[in-house]
Amino acid sequence: MENVLEIDDLHTSFFTRHGEVQAVRGVSFSLAKGEILGVVGESGSGKSVTAMSVMQLLGRGGKITGGSVRFGDTDLVTLPEEQLRDVRGARISMVFQDPMSSLNPLITVGKQVQEMLDTHTQLSKAEAKARVLELFALVRIPEPERRYDSYPHEFSGGMRQRVMIAMALACDPEVLIADEPTTALDVTIQDQILRILRRLQAELGMSVVFITHDLGVVAELCSRVIVMYGGTIVEEGTLDEIFTHTAHPYTLGLLKSVPRIDGDRGHRLESIPGSPPDLLDPPKGCPFAARCEFARNICSETPPPEVRLSETHTSRCHLLAQAAPSENNPFAEMRPAHA
Image 1: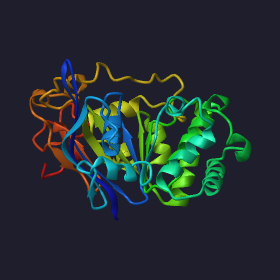
Image 2: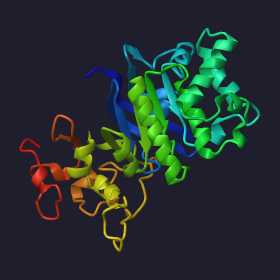
Image 3: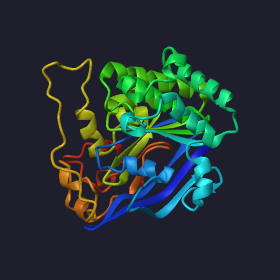
Image 4: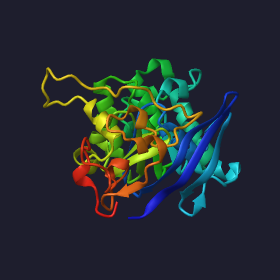
């Protein structure tokens, strides 16, 4: 399957008065044409910084220190800013977590979406407005003509997020990055937004990177999943592989924290004890070692290699090594002979 985006050995840091925060450390993955890829992990795992690196929106102090982000034949890391502006928003778009902070409260929502068209297309004012109304209908905003002249504060949170999706889709992007777009919404509105994204992806054929901390949302939307922790990818696989053939202790911990509709009502959800690593001084071994109930001495001393469990499933865990003891090892039967 053709890839539209290929990220190779990406390193991104933020340079602060306290030192270098190594937010993304050697991340590599690809996005296929027409695919919905889920990127999951706790706050601080590097998910959003990876997305911001793709969009080159790191802000003050942020810098890509290594690796490449290939979009077609173009490396976005080395692309001049002027050419990057032609890609950003037009061919690769992003939906952010908080639409209220992304929308200008002093400008009507219709005008704000139209600004995207004015920047990236040659449409006349009348054609651009017609396109905005078409987009509003596409994302199920009722009464598009009347809503065009509304201000952000006149919309609910869910409706504001629909405006952001309309804005992101304005120029028919090839790639849509959705950075926790449903986190601040209640479950009913969240479900509506997920349905809209799923329908639009199917209708428009675009590729989607969906960033979230919620594996339940991933199960609803995505076909392939990347699990991030401590600025690295710890596991990658299809939805079935991540949920039913889990191969990393961190992923196991995330799954235990997800409520099940068919589960025992008296069963307590489990949290992962401890805190994420300090990326001012990243651990030299596995980033999850300090919080892992299965950790061995090697885990805190040596970075785990990537172990390939199938053509689509990889994990970075010392427990998958052939020499790893079977005692207190949840992955003992998964160890490949060559690991």
